[in-house]
Image 1 (cartoon, one colour):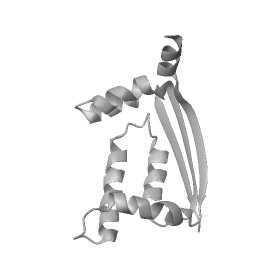
Image 2 (tube, one colour; image 1 turned 120 degrees about the vertical axis):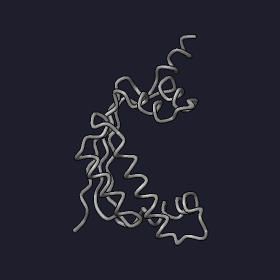
Image 3 (cartoon, one colour; image 1 turned 180 degrees about the vertical axis):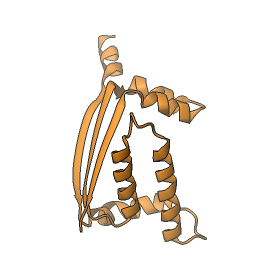
Image 4 (tube, helix red, strand yellow; image 1 turned 30 degrees about the vertical axis):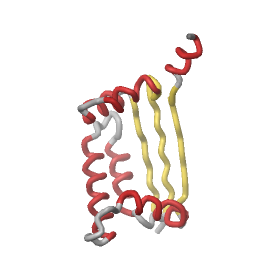
Length: 135
């Protein structure tokens, strides 16, 4: 039971990632993502990417500033709009209190109201994002 309790409380408290986009995104991720996300064979891929980008930007606008501050939202929006050929350096910093783990994510996965479950799952989470495009 101690092991079960320990596993149930384990989770992600902080994460920091930094990467320089210099062509690796297109080489390793763009094709698999394209196969998964671009499903309308009657619409040009560029139009589908533009639509998905704007949907992602609209979703970011729904996140409270306590989760995603305005500067981070703007940077993430600029990064999304640079896809599918981003060039520059991105950094993501996540902090969560309480931790993001099974106990926190399960209600979101099982909820019939994903929007309110997402808001509850993001309580105490802060996402900071920077994007420095190459000039």
